Image (spheres, rainbow, N blue to C red):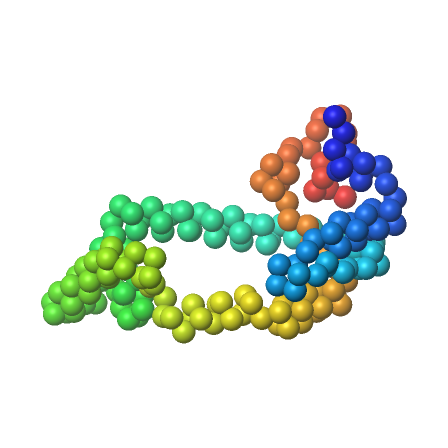
Length: 182
């Protein structure tokens, strides 16, 4: 059974862009209750550009995933030690540099954090609310997002993220080059 993607692969860029524009128009924005208008020229400008493969961005994303999983595991296995570590980092201190009263204060404060998280559940935040508010405001600032994407568009270089499988493909023995070699 053919899928839309199979048809797209056989089309010329102009046809692809026109069809993507139609699909985008069919999306009704839940805020404005209006169709989303993006001219096919926008897609053509993107698809006609040379591609710069940025492996570095993909590596950073993978590294962030690894760090996130490790920290989440540490937090689940040793919540008090996890919070003590965060407090030490915030205080710019090392465990070896603490006085006896600082060690006691650290343990008590970390225990309070664990208890607060347990009782407050989703209302609990380690990060200051001002930063969380800033994140939400930035994420929802359509003018800022438009400015960021306009700057990217002005650069006229679009990046493609490679998944793990593509990054690990070895060069085939038949002399053909893999996707990362040019």
